[in-house]
Length: 170
Length: 283
Image (cartoon, rainbow over all chains, first blue to last red; front, side, top):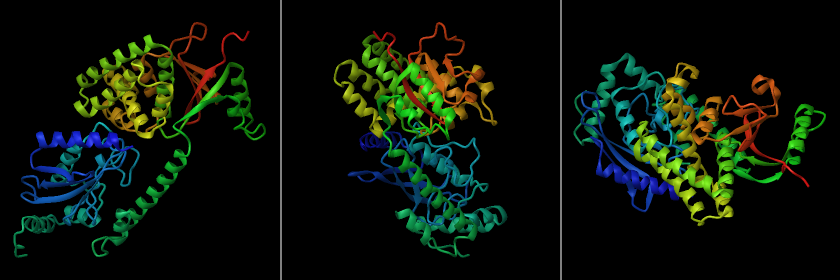
C-alpha cells in the first residue's frame, strides 16, 4: 500500500539533495522510515525571523502524495499561522474543501502534483508574510497587527535561542 | 494520536479561548470526516458487474416511486450495473473502469490509448505542469496499460489493481491531470464558464487536480474530449438532465439516432455508476 508513497518520497529526497532550495535542509530522520522527516528552515532575510534556523518535523500519510503531509515546528515559534503546539496551518497543507480556518478560494492548495519543496517554500513565505486573516494563533495575529515591535522582540529572542545565543536585554 | 494529545495539552496561557474553540471544531470535523471515510470505504472501489435489478431493489415502490419506476424502465434497455464507490472520484473512476474494459477486449484500441497517453505526458509538461511530480502519474498509467498489452496482467489482475486504493487512485490521478490539461490547453474556450472569481488555472488546481473533489459539467466535457470517448449519461432524475430528457450524449451535439456510446454511466444525484446495455440480439 505504501509502496508508491515510498517511491515518491525517495524521489523527492533525491531532488531536494541534488537541487536544494536556498536556506532549507530536509531529510528523513531515519533512512528506515521515509514517512517522518526533519527539516531546518532559515528565517527569510529582512524579516524579524532573519538568521534564525527553525527545526520542524514533517509527517507523511501512507497515501502520500494523494493526501498532504502535516508539518510541525519543534522550536516554540510564535507566529499567526502556527498553532501553539507548532503545527503549521497554511493552505498548501490542506486539500481544497478541507477548510479549518476558511482560506481564500484562490490560495494554493494541496494536490498530488505539489511537492515537499513547494510546501517548504510556502512556509518560508509564510514566515516572511504572516496571514492574519485566518490565524491559527489568535494572540500572535493580534500582536502582529497591533504591537509589531513586541512581536519582533519575541521573534528576535527565538532567533537567538535557535542560534544558541544568550537572550538579549528586554 | 500524537496530535490529538497535543491539542488537549496545549498550554492555556498561550491559547486564547477563541483558538481553543477552533481547535475543538477542527477535531470534531476530523472525526466526522473519518466517519464518512470509513462509511465510504465499506463499499468496494469498483463493484462486480451485477444485474440491474439490484438497482431496482434499492428503491421502495411507495416511498421512492419515481426512482423505482425509472430503475425499472432502465432494465428494459440495460442489463447490468457496476457500482462505483462514492468518494468524490466516482465520475473519473467510472470512466477509467469503462475504458479499461474496452481496452481489455480490444488490443488495437489499447495500443492507440497507450500512444495518446504518451502524447499527453509531453503535452502536460508543455502546458506547465510540474515536471516529475506530474510525469510520475503518467508513467505509472502507461506502465499499467503496457502490462495489459504485453499480457503481463490479465483481467483478474487488472481488476485487483482497480480495487486497490493506492494503485487505483494513482491511475485516477492521470485522468484528473489530462482533464485539467484539456481545460488549460483550451483555456480561451472554457474560461467564460468558470465562476466565483477564479481563474481557469485556479479552478483546475482546486477542483480537478485535487483528489476526492467531485466532477462538475466542465470536468465531464474535458475528460470526454481528453480521452476521445463517446459517453452517454442516463439520469435517474429527469430534472437533472439537460433539455429535460432522460439522458445526455457527450461530446455535445450528438443526437440519439446516430450515437453509439463507448461507455454509459448512470447518474443518481451526486453519484455515477457504470451501466451496460443488453446484448443487441437475443436469439
